[in-house]
Length: 381
Image (tube, helix red, strand yellow):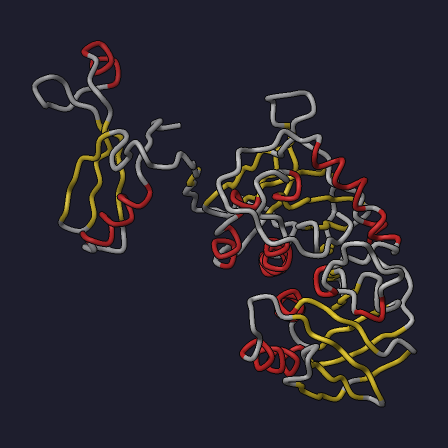
C-alpha cells in the first residue's frame, strides 16, 4: 500500500471533469515539512505533517489533502481501486448474467424497515448454480446462474444499489464468498472486477424457506408476449380510479383477455393455452412489474384462481399471489373484506405466511421513517 488516503468521490470526479487536460492522470503520494518543502516519510512523520496527493492532469497540478470533499453528511462508502498492466481477475461468472439477475431480483425486495431480512437479496451458491432470491412478502423472484462454488450471503438492497450499472462496464468478473472476520458465522460477498473490488458483509438473519412456496404443478400454462400484454396494462391503468387497479385475466380458445373488474376497458391478444383454468385476478402493478422483469415471451402457470401464480422464463421464476373475486369467497364473514384486498387464505403458500412472518419478526427491527403502506395480498414469504 503506497498511501492510506480518503477522498470524496463526487468531489474527485468533479475535479477531474473540470481540469480535463489529458486522458492520463498521475497521482503521487506527497508529504512536505513545516516550510512547505518536500520531505521523506520519516521526516514528515517526525514533524507531524499531514499527507497529501499530488495530482497531475495535463498542464494542471494540484495537491489534495486527506479527507478532501468529505463533510459531515458524506456517506462513508468505500471502494478499493487497483491499477495493473495485467489481467489480475480470473472470471468465474458473466457480468451480463449477473447484471440481469440483480435487475430481476432487486425490485422484488421489501422496502419496509421492520422486515430487515426481506430487505436483502439472498445469494446462495451450490450444486453448480448461483441463485439470487428476492421477496417482499407479496412476491418472490428467483434467478439461477451457472456457477462453480459454494456459499451464502444476505446483502441489503441499499448496498447493491448502482452495482448493476457498474458491472455492465466490467470485462472480467469474479464472485466469491469469504469469512468476514467480525464473527464466527460472518460471511462476505466479494465481487472482483479489473478495477474495483466490491465487498459486502452479510446481514444477520435467516431467509424464509422459499423453495416450498414455488408451485410444483400447474393445471394451465399460457405462453404469451409480455410486450403486447404491457401495452394492454397501460391502457387499463389510465382508466383506473386509483393507484390500485385489479386486472382480470380470462383465457378462452387461444386468446387472453385483460380487463378491469367493472369491464370499463378490455384488451385481447393471442396466446398458446394448455389447461382448464380460465380466469384469475391479479394486482395491475404486480402484473406490470412481472412482465417487465420477464421480458419477451413468458410462461404463465396457474393451479386455480386462488393459488400462487408462477411466471417463468428459462431459469427465472417469479411467484405472486392472486386477488380473490366474489366467486372465490368460501364463506361470508361478519366484517367482509373487499374482494380486491382479501388474501387467498386456503392455499399451501398462504398457510406459510405465519411461519415466514414469525421468522422476520425475530430479527431486530429498524426504526420506521416511512408511512405505513397499504396492505396487499401476501405471497408466503
